[in-house]
Amino acid sequence: MSLELISIPAIAVVVYWVINLLKYTFNNSEKFKRFIPLTAALLGVIIGIICFYSIPSIIPTDNVWVALILGGASGLSATGANQVLKQLTK
Image (cartoon, rainbow, N blue to C red; front, side, top):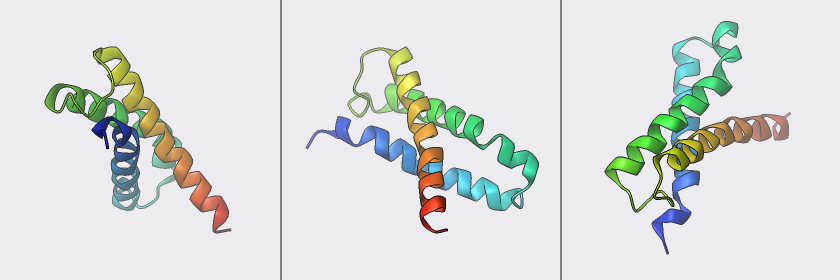
């Protein structure tokens, strides 16, 4: 199994848990909730760039800009996963 297949879900899982930790840190404030998607995208971008330079075999690209976009999309997918779980538990 190639490591490239797990990079996007792995980034999404890390961003999901960091966002949950930040929610509890900021006591679920309404101000923070408004910026969750932006925060998730930025975290994904940062993780994507870190992975691109530190573990190049995990990101399926040779271009830092594509790694940046993959990271951002992975971060936003964490927000979408959160909403799916929230709607399924209602």
